Length: 562
Length: 30
Image 1 (cartoon, chains in turn brown, purple):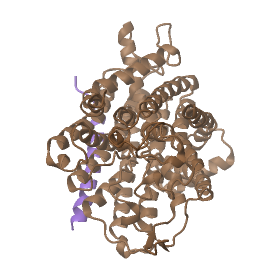
Image 2 (cartoon, rainbow over the protein chains, first blue to last red):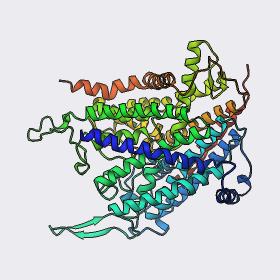
Image 3 (cartoon, rainbow over the protein chains, first blue to last red):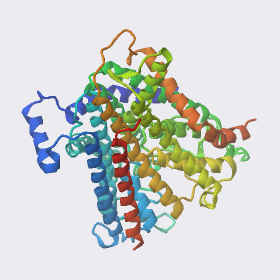
Image 4 (cartoon, chains in turn purple, yellow):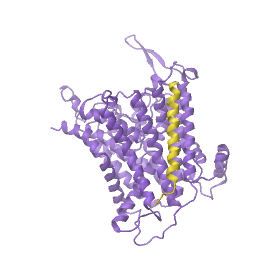
């Protein structure tokens, strides 16, 4: 009952909050022509700030090239800032240079909104690197995702131009992410998260030992990490650390923030394409899949862990206690719920040890990353869902023998090729990477467990990188040159290709003539559409990833079956 | 020095993505 109540409060409460926020996102990202003078003045300011490139409307290709150029500059600036950290200020604890491959991996990770971490922040990063490399990237990478969704929505609304990337990224940063992050950071600070630029504190324990306690500007970092579906922790243990997530209440607040903007993005999309009932259908499909995943994780986590099976005095009456923070409640409650929310939304912060989840409960976060559209990342979750919608309307159209249409435009060969390519690339990088590392010492020598669980560790790592998630299964010694280079490249490629190709589809669709709706047109806002879309997502996901799941978590589950 | 090589690797990746964008924009041949 506790678990159900927690799910209803967190998921249901966030769904309610997402409606007004969706309205605000639309106001911020796509102001109506009749918007008031203050709103228009803000846009003029953003255009002036962007200089000449901010003055012109962009087609899909120019929009994408602007996004890539901006992100490449972000990459270089953040890279330089972190590379020079021993010589830059805000380094009270004297942090040294970051190893080159780890540096590449970390900057690729935060630029791509993944925030997969092969380091512990408290041991590796100066405050300068945490704030001006990592936290800055957490804002602008999330803003990039929101800008891309706004551009796609404009194309699908039939506009010839997709807007201007440089203006959109400022709208997302200054009108959405900064104000929200300020409010949430204050709440976290009141909840007990430190917010200081002073160096580590030194304490003397009762035994007389000297203990160094790392701290820093944590509240600000955690706020955007959760809101921007970034997920990178200030400390190595992420949100299991008592400074990042001090209480039951900050735990609830974190989970709400993880879901909030991804949910609101769906409503923003619906408002921008002027099909709010279509958005409601998509939102429902996402919600049903998410709740199914949560139910699976909570169910499988009610069983005790096999790790304690041979330890007689350990009683696990309420489920799997391993790797859980008991201050957040029952082991089958917050831990599995957070693990699914953080992976379904491409957030990647962790509130429990994912490596310690029971095998089938550990499969659920992987499913969230494989589908990557059950709300998904800020902006990009809805873009991923758009690809599934294109495939679903194509399949439905073929079944009834009509040319498929989406929002009154025909989906034809070019759009389908690009949609299939997007889906294939997502699976390709995850599965080929897993196979390569499972077959070579690059992966074999780094796993923390043998057999199916070791395979799951490798599979999870590539799934996390490929889905731009950033959570870790842990148990893996992944700060090596092969891991840093391979997952660094996967994160960059799997971040931008699934933005480039959908925007190309959007550009292609917007250039077509609209077709009149007829009795044979597939409705995209009723139950039939919802069922077809849900089935398409599950089928594509199962066909791509089931064999890998069978080798990892499912095989491990069967090994322990009594 | 090694840092610069990794920086170059990142920039080459962004360059490859820009090339992909150009390739996708090319009209299809029947």
